Amino acid sequence: MRLPRVEDFEARARGPRLTARVGTWLGVAFGVCFLTGMWSHLQYDPPAWAPIGPRPTSLYRWTQGLHVATGIACVPLLLVKLWSVFPRLFARPPAGLRRLALHALERWSIAVLVASALFQLVTGLLNVVQWYPWSFSFRPAHEAVAWVAIGSILVHVAVKLPVVRQTFAPEDTEDGDGDGDGTGAERAGAPGRRAVLATALGASAVATVLTVGQSVPWLRRVSVLAVRDGTGPQGLPINRTARAAGAVDAATDADFRLEVVHGDRRVTLSRAELAALPQRTHRLPIACVEGWSRSATWTGVAVRDLLELVGAPAASTVRVTSMQTRGAFARSELPAVFVEDHRTLLALELEGEPLDLDHGFPCRIIAPNRPGVLQTKWVRTLEVRA
Amino acid sequence: MRTARLLLALPGVAAIVWGVLLLLDRPDGLVSVLVWAGGAVLVHDLVVAPLTVVVGLGLGRLLPPATRAPTLLLLAGWALVTVAVSAVLSGQGGKPDNPTLLTGHYGLAWGVLSLLVAVALAVLVVTGVRRERRRTSAPS
Image (tube, rainbow over all chains, first blue to last red):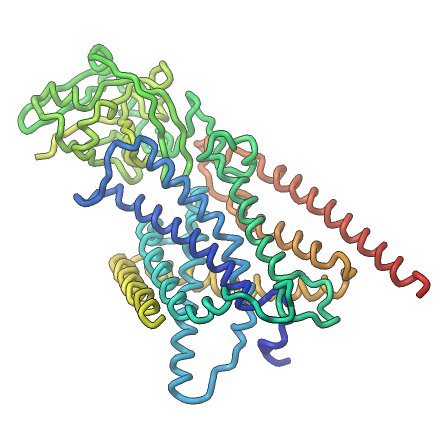
């Protein structure tokens, strides 16, 4: 037994021409996935410079749907790209200290690139089905490794730029069909480079179409492998039930009172009193960080109308507190730019019926263009931030 | 070229450093992150990649040359799609009290898909073998 050498691998499709082309597609998909992912991370604590507000209403629905879709599309592309360079793993280190050091450095950068890229895809895919077989916290880890991944991609492109340029130059070999270099008899019938590229893109497209129905309603019937089919109580899926959030007792208490607080002014309202206030009805999407989204018709009191009761200006930042006793996001901050918009509701009804307990009964926040986790359910307190 | 490479590499290194700083910010999860990142590489390099080489070589020898390429590619495409959707096929995840997550009949859907691929593969192999026989038995 001996370790294989680069020349031992015989697939004729392998080579820089295939790698550069799959790499380009992968780079674009990964780039979109990175940008949409960072956009999503920004939503949690929007910095002043970020143009995050209630319009466009469906922006987050699109960016996060795109994030998960491009992530899934990356899987076949990354595997084919790794396949196309696998023999290089067995390249023998060069002689000479300087060249050896450069070789080792490049090897390490590629190890970091592959490790971070695989990590992002594996953790992202498992998060979509809410399976967490690890002990790190998903969101910060997925964000941190995203920076490592995009950084090592940039370094990798910088290192390989001369090779990439060469592979995109017109071919001047005798192998005019551009199918690769090997035309020996023993390789007859082996897949060519273009066919492998087409297979990678095809598999990527098929995997995307089979799963993207959770974000694209008209593809729901085709997306037989989508995580969600858009159904649920009152026609809307749930991310966390009232039971899982430990909110059942408080939310179903007949003595429930909503508190609206502004400095030392405080108003308490029962659900009946909330329902007696002027109601607004808006059709708004709910878009989860896990990629699924669906539009629904919500009825309730505009948050800005509630602020009026305690004499707070419409453009106030509001801290929302939930009655949930378990899990993250029991509190959320509603920036002033959302509160100002009359479509930002403390919703009491969904599709003309009182909210289902799992959708946040007795009342929940629904605002345009926000991630689902920040659309706080089972609301107990709205507090104007100083 | 040199400028372009620098313009790519410098922000690249900066992004890596920033990512590492973010990771160090949460030292409690760090070991788990490293295990999963390193583990993914090992699983790929020691299991997935050798497996594709062995399957490719084996089938490459067995299959008739006339349909070798389409057969291998169809099989590869099926395997790639399967890996991409493996999360819903794993039977893991979801929550017992939340029927709106993992709503599909994934085993059935994937089974039908695999059956269609298997039929197509069988047709490819049979026509390939026939063509091969006709070629070798034809009077020269």
